[in-house]
Image (cartoon, rainbow, N blue to C red; front, side, top):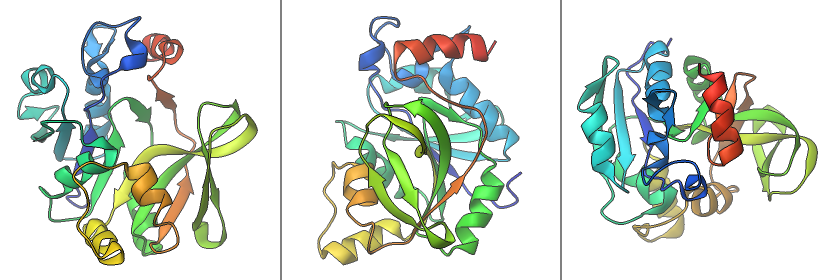
Length: 238
């Protein structure tokens, strides 16, 4: 359990376009699993991990999320970083980080990855990282890109999606330094755009300038972004 008051940012602004065939018009993290929205299970997980404060990065139909979860849920205090227009994953994270004055965990609101957050944070501190990534080993897949790591778990390269027999994927759970975006702006010698991709414009673009380290975790993982895995979640979360 986390022994420090590190907050978590949960990216919950996704439209769920690929799930339109199985869910009605709603943010993807609100897709019902049994009689609860998927986001409910993420809050349960965060509570067990000792998280007490969450910033929800929301956009599309954000009122559906705020009406359900309010300002406190599962004992966790909630604030909302509302995107008036889609900002991309990077813009959403940057807007939420501006509400926080410490390092932060970042999680995707449509992915459940059972990571020991205390372990991830200890790893982040030990490696003196700018970003620590939780990695998951997958087999026989083509849906995800892979992450190549080297000595001291330093991330060396991000590889594009293609069929692989085995590989480490980015599980979408991070620790971010409170100074991350300041360092990026200093490197680029300009302000960040309001809308940008965290994966393309931060992780990939600044791979050689910043310190990214990846740690493999073996916990349960599911991404409900496609109908097949959304249906699998219905069984797994019973």
